[in-house]
Length: 309
Image (cartoon, rainbow, N blue to C red):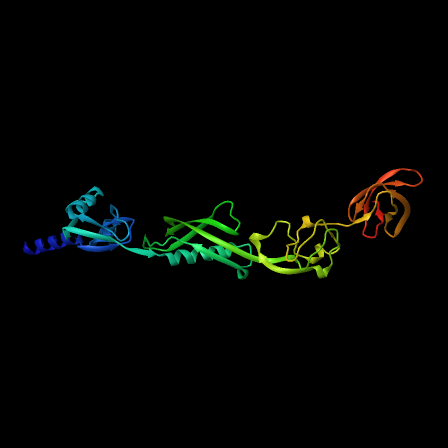
């Protein structure tokens, strides 16, 4: 009888799952399970370990759990008192693990983002950042930054950036930063004074590096875009050359007798006509045939001839 009783007690012990609560534990969060705060032995070890106990404390903070609460949650999960026995500490202090993100890390991430998105040459640009002086306490895990500039910002001058800091894919913090960006590029500049109405020559111009934020939208870069044109007003030394400062010279004058060309593919027909208006290179002017008095439109060429398609 004694042998039978020992065998029955051993069989009973083998069927029991024992939960031994720890007095202090460090957890990852955001949820707590029995497996986070206890050593578990027995046939139902895995199932009992997955029983949830609610949310963990915020990063770098702690939550106290009574043994009675743990036992109650295990019972609500469907485990009987005879199958799962809870022992160990009467009170568990669960500290949530954390990590700190400081100003240096935020600034480095934003600078990397801007350099990747910058439409200008990074080597010729200056980037000044204004990042809040703070230390963010985050849950433990893989950190990822996601940046977004203000909708109207074109990476030149002052702008705002909104950053989301994610841990394991979940947004935990949002920060607002400011940036001041200046880029430099080539622009055409007057090397000397160019009087109004004078034809621009190559020696009048020089290409210099200037801050892009200060350039007019119609600033010229290639000297070939300006050479041969006429200034509409006096251009002073060091002044940026823009399209508004220049105009094509008048090649054909009103009532001038001009040569008109038509045809193509090796066969060109030339005739004479009278221009009825002034014309600049590339412009269309109204002409009149000297014999028939028929009027037509033609394109003014650099040499003063009129081309009719």
